[in-house]
Length: 360
Image (tube, rainbow, N blue to C red; front, side, top):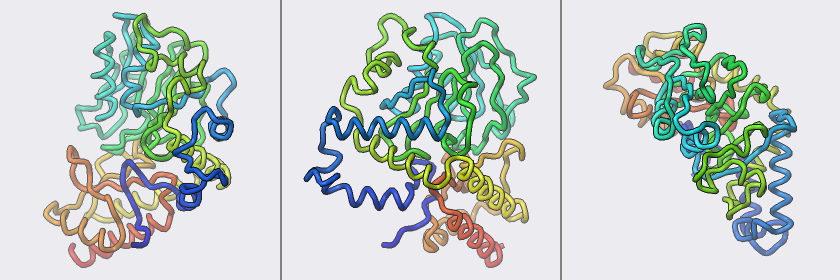
């Protein structure tokens, strides 16, 4: 079967060029007679891969020298616990913004360790907007301020970086990292699961300002302590070598495309044309406030929900896969991460227009 356009929210599409390199490397990596999945993570060759991956990521995101780059396991969900364990004392207040399912889960996990102050909550409008920062109820004593830059389920994205002042800003950037340039110096911690813009599930990028290291609570397990990863170059245990290797290939691929400025221009164009197609007709609609619409995850519903199953079936027949919306929202969702080619978005728009013509 030929490659299809995969609109999955994650695990998500990986660049064809990267898949081609993996295909060549799998049986015999660098003429070693072994797969990259078989070599020691402490071997000279793999250490070089890890170091190059970090260097390329630092260049892509312009990460300052006073930040540590960690490659961890457990996905972004494990960071829901690691952040409070490393950045707050027992019983200390932490500030969280709730804008969707993932920030809600982060709050639930942090509540096991901290006194969580929800500074703003968009549940009143079914998580379809980001509350104005001027209305947030911050706690001056909070150990940090946490938010999720992009909620993949509802397709809500922060159009701004919160101003946290002297309070460390912590961000779940799983579905927007590497989609555009960011000012890393605004953050205390950035974390991101790999399976959207970085590579296969199994590895998590964590960017931590160095002055925040070494403050884990007493009794914190070693593999939940940022400082342990920093001191061991993320190799205090056997890391997911394959996922790390693929992440490195993706970083190099993004550099070859012209870096994040070039990538951002394409991503913005893809999102704008898809939203324009949705807004052009009453047959489709998107519930998210216009200024908070995600570049990466575009949910939409059909005017007649009884057509949903037919839409999905015919879309798959046309080579457009994984468009079903999350069960909590319904409808459709097109995830158009970095590796989704513009041709895929164009094909989806063409299909939507034809489906409306014949079914509307």
